Image 1: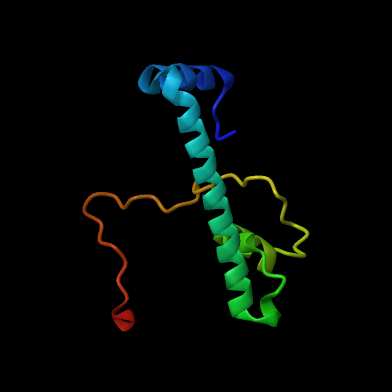
Image 2: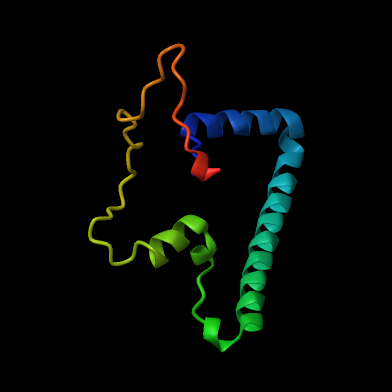
Length: 113
């Protein structure tokens, strides 16, 4: 859950008790729960409004498809047998050109400028 382990949750709980006090902590938890519920409802309403405004052509729109990584995977790499879902390593740049020796001029093509 958000990369937080059990020890971190215990520390957060202890700090919450110290900051808010044991008598105000239940009210704070209820308020936080209501806020989370309202945010989820707002996101759901926004998704539904987006689907309705885009029309019937986009009725099956998945909001996750708008993530650039998912979009590329779905539209560009779909059906590519060479693509695997594992992270790829960085390219090997061992064949990059070496620096010119001191005093040697770089190649110049007057027709290219």
